[in-house]
Amino acid sequence: MKIGWIADRLNPNFETAIALLRTRGAQVELIRPEQQPFDLATVRVQQDLYVLKSGTPLGMSLAGTLHTLGAKTL
Image (cartoon, rainbow, N blue to C red; front, side, top):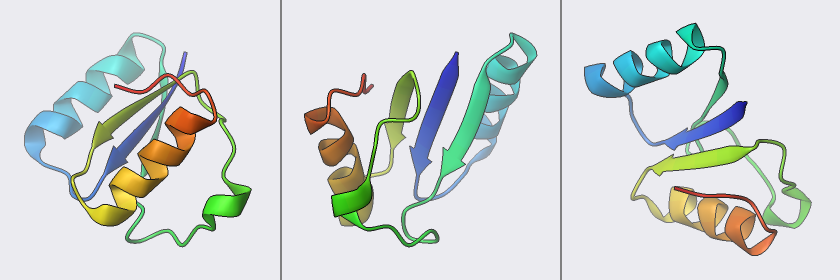
């Protein structure tokens, strides 16, 4: 399973969760909207699931766009 983890920051709990998912075979991509420029017009669903752990406007905009495009979001 491919998981996109949308976060504005990392804390030890997130790091532990990501490490556990990876040991169970998940491919986890860390997506940090504030540090990775993106154009909402070119965003495409590339993961099986997106986990939103960001409350920033950029993180919420990205998650909303992905949801509108049909992505499974949590």
